[in-house]
Length: 428
Image 1 (cartoon, rainbow, N blue to C red):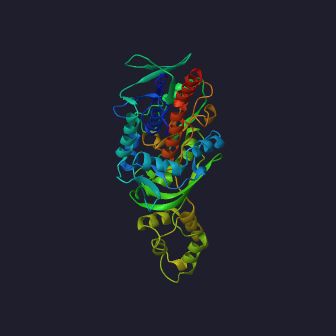
Image 2: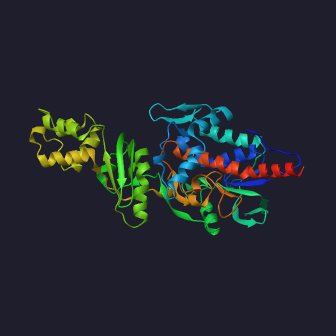
């Protein structure tokens, strides 16, 4: 990358609020571009959500991208423009070639992880690169306010004098996993500046159930096809499902959970969640239930399912698991097929922001320029990452969004370097 520095030009100051995934990426590109980059982090080290992601391994990217899997109440076209500004192949090259961080593809899921299987290596590589290009990390920096000035911004701090900077990048994250430092301050800054912030909600969070029949299955995990829908929205996924002592989890459940969350938050509670427990279709299950000459219902089901789950589905379908197939009535067969192929899972709530992977909603994409993430109403102010109204499914999608928007914001924030460089050359 060409670094735009000139001894006759005072490099602009860029304050990046938040040293999470998006903030670190913004710092890398702002610093590489020649900006005096100040990384303001409210915690002791930054990147806490990144450090715990993927069980400490960091699912850094997906190996393939389906843009339709992202969720937003903003313009889908704007979202796609932003995603395409830094394609997956180029992101992979950045980590492997620029940061010298080899990636490995997990065969079973297709997810990409650092070869070291250490999330800390990702955080440290990005921070080291930013610092090598002059970025400075300030820990325990509590930003309390932002004020636009004639030629920049004043960043107010709780325990230090205000900073005068040329550009500000808001990379504060959302409200999910508050123990990592997420407090929703970016949303508050945006609202105070008169920007549209779409309603926020917990996304990718476990679902709870009061049905004790399923509590007894805690610990059982299996791949499923799942869908959730209400009167306004729908979403589906194919991934691992996990029974817990409180309800349901696993990537498949997390991916569709926002439908249930929004239904509950909006006071409607009309959302339903349906599960197809196996890869067998209705024709195959019908054949197995109809044409077996001997055996019981439980015997047929447990060939494809864990025994405890097979028993629970029989109870759910109101069919005696010991009933022989020859005695199975037509109405019982229909209930069994429904339980196997489109099981209506009873849910009571969700685990909320406490353990949610991301925050849904946020700053509307109409408020920013897709190329630079710069605020249309407030020049010199940029947004990136989770604070924006976009999230994706489990599998590296949300890091993909963080990296793309962080890079765009970092480059956008340092563009004033090029502008000043050009003005100085013209004067000379």
